[in-house]
Image (cartoon, rainbow, N blue to C red; front, side, top):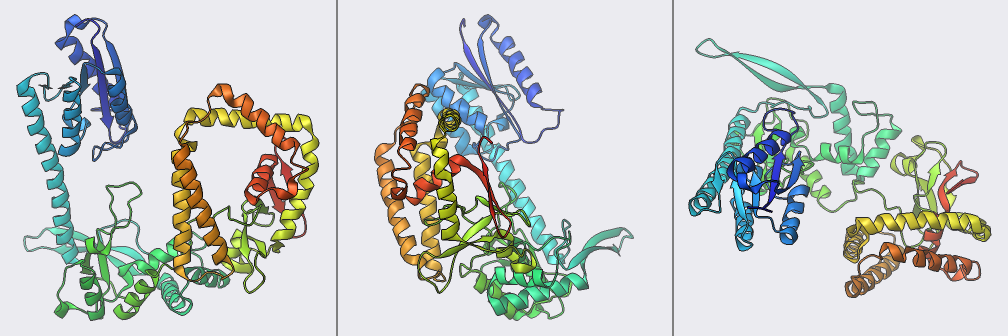
Length: 538
């Protein structure tokens, strides 16, 4: 066994510092190797550690690195402490074993004492993986059954209470004398008034941004004292907790194929609804699940919004109305400084906003806080977009004659290129294709909303065509990033371009001008009267 190569894989979902820690798993795997293969001597052992990752899938950085290394380094054995450290999915586990078998690599498991280099070990490994997945699916089914049981009681299961309510404990005495404690939602009248205002204003304005501006103008704040965010307002408008458990609500959720835990005859105008299983907590950031997976029950609290009105709000929200959840794009097809200017008054960025009802191409830079809440949130004066772009661009042209300064910027650019070269994938053709596709998707979505300024539609169509051409060009290119030895040549080429830029400044595209500005300028501050430029390297 001289020269035998081993890969050790260890994983733990949550760091605890005790029990089956990463360190303990690795130590036991090393002991296993020494006991089972004493003749191996000082074998080549590579360790892979994934801390904080579950076994629901194989999307773990070190596990994926191990799979890549298996193709190039071909170990003799892959060793882990326990089977579920690899995966609880039969398909994922089977795929790994098949790949190892194809490459004649054995898999050994310390705890279960499996070794796929032997026929019985291979058979037992598959049986154990089947039971591991069965256990996981059984637990998930048991959790859902328990959730359905609790839902029928209408109890509040804890956690952060919705806006408008607090949690109140209740005790019941059972027949055998034991006490049972449960929780129900208790009204918070002041917050509920705000909730009522949100629903009324949204039906009136059909705009979450409009609701936000109204609340800010009225000085209405959230629990923490800050303004209600756009996603926060949308979350409130979508929450069934405010919906009355009436016939209209029952029909709406039944039509959406939700698990409705009461009959039509049980509908009541006195109580509100509770929704369970709204989010998938097995995934990162716990994304919202489709209504078809929700569990809807009658709660013990009073409902606020009639079912017909609540359903009408949901239909409006489903009509692709912009909610502000996606951050404003700092770049567009016409402005040079969007997102680069900061408001002196409140510190927010200024973004380009086309002027409605005026000539094509006219726009202003507007404070982000002002866009969100109007002058009640920030009274900073807008600045004409074309004038600001021309003023800043012309003021930068003299800096191109400062050779030492340009040299310093080019060296910084070279360091950036070197870092990007090592990162590889980030700026590869494939990554740029994905970014172009994503931008094109957002533009097409914006066109489909039908609420755009007509002057912007030709610009968006033109940009979509540009992105399509760029994707076609990148698909043919797909070249690796330049090696470190070519960076000096790239820097020299950039220097030559900058040397000629004053003579051809007027011919540069918006994107080229924007790139030049960001090479020279760190940020710009607008105080309502003057623009102050802060240069890179000064």
